Image (cartoon, rainbow, N blue to C red; front, side, top):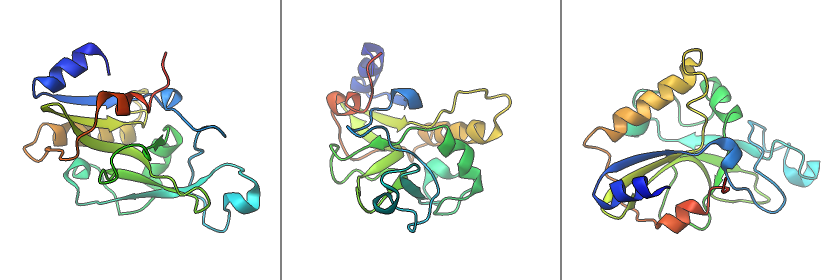
Length: 177
């Protein structure tokens, strides 16, 4: 969220913010440990042993995922993306903001977590992603396809985020350099 991105958003532009997983802000006990565990292996029984999440939920009909094969839940095409991601804790963002790719948190902590969300900022449109989509694109067809799908969506007339967020809210998700 540098000055150039803010200027583009204030001018009505579109910005894709890719937050490196290592820069996604966690909470006091530490970062969210992503995984595909079943509810049986919850943090209450394992004393917080990773992973601390139960997979993802998404709408396969959402235009952001139109070029990425998916069901509404975690499946094996998500494994690489999730293993190279940092879950954003979205509790302090507007309650009406629904992540495009939502992480299912453990029922003990029950935070609103996401890997992809969109929002309106100023006069512009913002898409935020915390999966590492830039790592080795030549040899990583999964990340390359997800990035393609997100960019195609952003360049379509369907990309019209409704929920406004402030720059400070987005910055609160990122560990400063």
